[in-house]
Image (cartoon, rainbow, N blue to C red; front, side, top):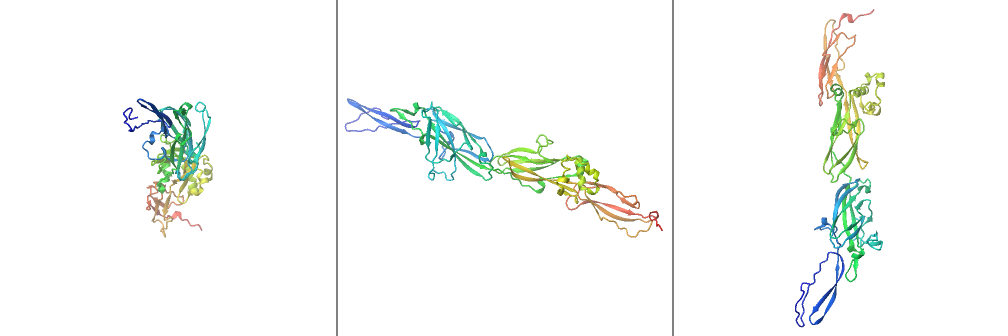
Length: 474
């Protein structure tokens, strides 16, 4: 009381305020005794009902949400064991025992005003806590389907001492929803029923704490946004292509070729993927580029980029073996039979015959760079390999000298064009019956061409007929 003693005049009255400090819920009974001089004292009973749960979440202090809220944020499908730790404080003066239940909400409108459902769950309690081994608890509203396959709370049952704190671990498994592709907002409710030992539950003429009512249930909600974080890339045609020249491989011994592909994760969730590609391509190790792995696991953070280097190894022997497909008119059967069946590139002739451009002397090979999310193929990007063999063109393809007098020389000219982007060497040979023809230059090197204008060399052809070359038989 704010006034412990005083004087009361005849037929007078006074006001006394009684202050109550309560940190634990329950119904309390107190006797208020008033002593008067020279008269018998009298008393009256005061019943106090303290409401509210004895549990506090520091993360929810000063929050404006109806329930304490744990936000997992943006998560990808197919992840497991994504965990969060939260702190819980027992603000009461007695130890409590909590059994947790997890409910997956299935309602779009989850407000209490429109929710006429309810949940019923059963708590099996140790006999040291309560003599009644089993208790049925009925909620005033529906919270969804009870399940721990999507969200698990560790531990599921706990003791919390008076005025102490503890850590609760939440584990989320987004694999629960399978291979989904559409984004999804998920809400879970976690309910903890509070139980007390008999000595803390009631004491005659002092207090009584009701168990199983709304005042003895701890509630908080868990929110998450699930999505399938697909990678995006802005590719030109050349960005996913590897170009090589047969002459470069043979003469410069350049065997490794590559192309870099940049992917972007434009989502707000982590993208956990693995990438595969078939021969002859491979995905090099960052520390060892010669290690030929064809599977690579990657984790791309939100709004981050991933550079994937696709490499291809081709040596001079493979180039020579493939030349039989590009120049069939000069390939002998015995050479074709000697090709290495274990050479994956040599199988291009058999498996990818439609990719051989004999006219332009180009071999085209295409394989898909495959991206898997949660072991499900979600994206493919075509990687092209172009092998350019030496390709020249002579214009005009015939030389006409007209009428030439014996012993005189007539000159003509042809132009040799290089139709590829790498230098090409050439040499002109003539048969034994073409002694009257002379070429200059009879060998040379044509630089690589770029664009529409092709690099070329003019070759002059001289024709000098002699009498001995034209014998007339009668």
